Length: 223
Image (cartoon, rainbow, N blue to C red; front, side):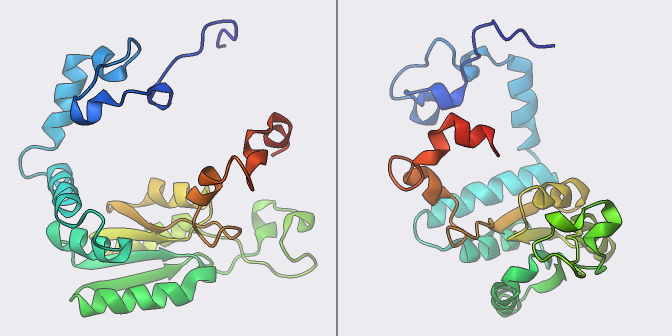
């Protein structure tokens, strides 16, 4: 059991220097970069060297960032990234609520010479009651409501030997399950936020006005 009387650990979100980025200032006394074990650092950096998958992903991501920073949309960056890691078959783990957006994305992938393989979240069409979700916790009570099935989405993509899987709007938590069960690397195209038109960062940008409830402890405790 953790000692609640101990001083809270300071981490990167407490830093005002961000010296790790460009080395133009100084590291704070609690800096994780300064305290990280040299062996851990070397082991991590080693992953990005050579010809392994981790190395190819790291270099491709850096190349896309360096060439197209602030120039391409996330859709275009995803295509550029997929090409640079040699991915051809692209799994799309889509929310049914964003299936129209997924159809457009699949079209883009085809134009790029890539092969989309889409699996919607309601695959298997199993009622939520089957996993112990009571009727009162359904969105629409009193009838059939399919559960999301991210593990099955991942399983079907694993069977298809997809090279890269892309999440399109899976719910918070369902995305965790999909990533947990996916054998191929996973990237995110759309993060679901129905209230903010799938732009969750807006909640953080408006915390001094419209979303001030985020810093209300009583509200957060009620979640």
